[in-house]
Length: 202
Image (cartoon, rainbow, N blue to C red; front, side, top):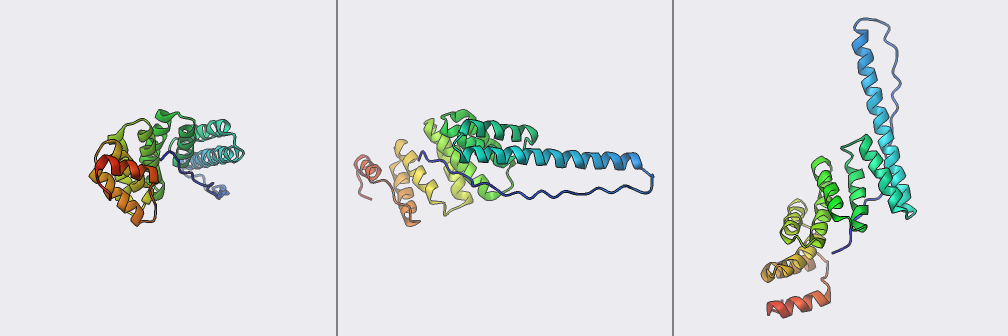
């Protein structure tokens, strides 16, 4: 339950546009402003990607603190950079900074356009809530994961554990069965505790 997912480095191809001169001077001021805006956007995007990849390189080397700094710089340049929030959220979670980690995953949920990334953000936020013993919030996020991806077995497995701590044994057993149906076995010690506390064998 404590394992955080990680996203592998995303290769991003930067396309450089060569802006030609406008032979006609009609509306030259507005054209120049438009070109300037495009150039600024391209520059900021490239700078954000540079810091994002730099953070990934630091992570690969095991320097998590520097990775966090680099991802933070990427976010500063591009405040809607969902992947940078996701990676920083993972790193902060490993550092035990759960409030900050949860905040980053919340940002991913609100900014990401990729469905799989949203699923992982909900899942990881649920893990964070679980560590904080916020069982209702954790259950809500695991349930959201399952709504978005009904075959995501780790969500059933972890939700079974959270239901157990809430003493909702029937729901816990349902998730145990679903997790195992999807090929993800439960911890034997956990199953023994569930059997003992619920008075059931399955």
